[in-house]
Structure formats: structure tokens, C-alpha cells
Length: 226
Image (cartoon, rainbow, N blue to C red; front, side, top):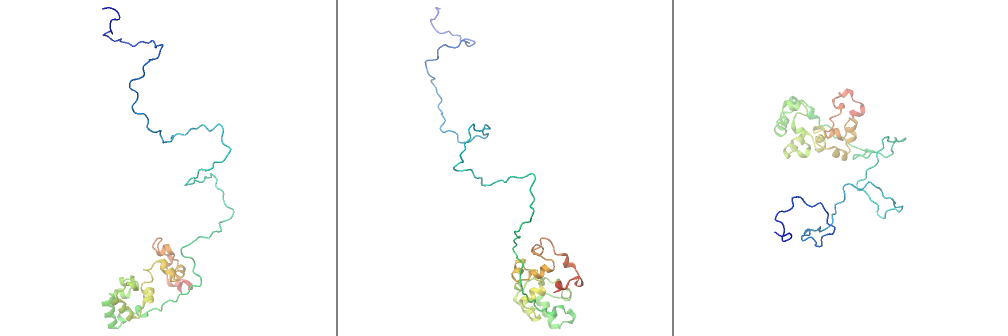
């Protein structure tokens, strides 16, 4: 076969290592079909660590403000030479010139069961659930855990027969135990409780009762007895 009459049927096993001196005259037939539609808006996660060679000596017209400023922590905090003069605010400020008239005690409640009139025993048994045991032992009848407003009309009638009303029942029978500290404060009763070692946390069951609650009557001061 004559030289140059047609392409060889056997391709070169290894490509030529000689670079073409002239670039191809024909552009690529298949340029990319998916150009970038929009530039990336994701900032770099690693900012440059090279500072500007010529920093501006003019302040920014809109400085950056952080929504959550983080104060600088000192390894050696300074101690104030004088205490703060801002008093602690409390939900229950000290009452001044409070006046509370304690309801008169209904003595019949402290009368032994066997000394009660028969008709009274029957009434308090049927209406209030008393018997000899829980009458002679204070705070053992569940009715004494109720405030006056929680009593039924039947119970109120029996309590009224004994000599109780709203305030004397809540004071001497319930001992105000079913009321919140806030309610007692509004009634100006908290100063008396504070004298006995109570505060809002103790009264609301957060810190337990004061040790004073276990004291005998003879161990109380005159102010505490009052």
C-alpha cells in the first residue's frame, strides 16, 4: 500500500511526547453546558489572617453591634472598697404600723369531749366528723385543714353554733395554714409569723418549718407568745 493513501488501522500505542508548535485552529465542539447561574453567597468559614496593609483611620459610619455582648473577664477581679447602696427589692416589703386584732378564742373547742353537752357532741359528730379522739387531739380531724370558705353550709352552721365565724375559724382551727404567704401579707399577718421564724419560703413549704415550731411555750419570748 502506498504511503499516505489512508489512516492507519492501528493506533499508536503510546501518545507522542512532542508538543504541537501551533494551537488547534478549531474550538472545542462541546463546551460546558452548565455554567454557574449565580455566584456563591456563602462567606468563607476561614477569614483571612492577613490584616490590611493600610488600615482606615476613619470610624465606620455604621459600627457593628452585638445582640449579646460578652463582657471581658478579668483573671483578677477587683474588689469594691465599699458595699453597694442599692437595697434588695422584695415582693413583701416590711409592714409599718400594722394593726391586726386577733379573733377571740372559742374556748369550747378546748373543752374535753366528755364535758361537752350531749346535743353539742351529736351536732359536731354529725356535721363536722368529730369523735372523742379527734376532738381531744387538735389537728387530727381533716375538717380543721379547711378554711372557712371551703366549709359546706351544714358545717358552717355547726361551727357557728360553737361560736366560730370566718376569722376565728381560719385563725384558731385552720391556723391560716391553707392560705398563701401573699394572702397573709395582704391581711398584715406576716409580721407575727416572722416573729416566730417563718418567711415566705418556709411557709410555702420550700425550706421546712422553723425550729421554733418545736419549742415549748415556756421557751418562747413574750413577743413570740403574743
